[in-house]
Image (tube, rainbow, N blue to C red; front, side, top):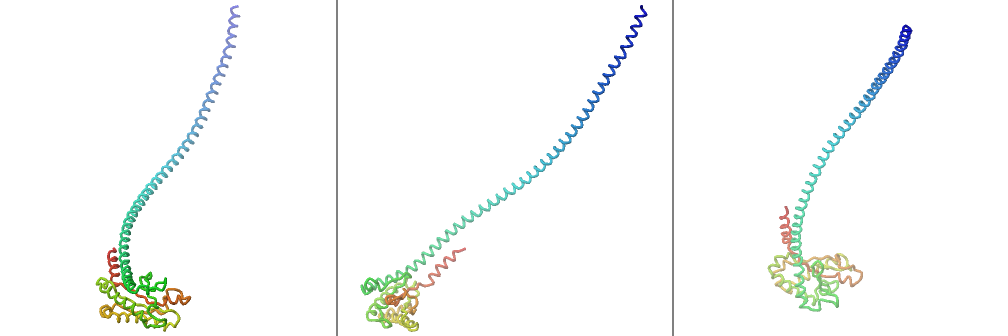
Length: 305
């Protein structure tokens, strides 16, 4: 009985250990496979991480290059900005200089305009002197002769826009003649004494260069005849004034000159006899000495830089 039990126990132990070994072998094998899978996974993960790291490094490198490019562009833009600011500053200084120069030029121009105004005023005074002298002569003659200076509503002695004394030829001559009429001699007598009184003034004599008596005809005759007629009438006026007042001839005859313009320089278009009558005239002009004008201009020119 004891032997039977011992046999039975030995047989049980022989059946137990092979099963345990199989289990342990299976567990080791599973563990091995698990370790292998884990190792493979780690290897795969490491490679993935390496790839991702490389990609990240590449991206980072590209980003660095882009950043460097951006920094270089920014540096260039800063340089351009500095250059532009310098250019703007230079332009502003240039414009400021131009504005200052413009201010100086305006001040100089204003000064020159004032000087020109002075010159104009002086020249106007000379023109007014001519006008005022002839006005005085005309006024003194009108006081002496009264209504004989007009033909109805139309004056026969006038002062034109150029400060010339204009005498209608009918007051002095018959048509086509250069002989002074009796009424014309009376008128020229008054002119002779009026001019003498004017020329007695030393300041007036210093300003006057000449007194020009000009004759004008109409177009009824030939140029030659009209030219001779206009010249003869001007000479006749001067001669008659000198005869009427010998003192004028003796003291101031050198101031008088005669000229003729034939039918040229008409006052109006000769459409009828009334128009032709207006163009037949004697014109008295007073020329101021050029030296006065030249002195005014010379003084102005000397003030120029």
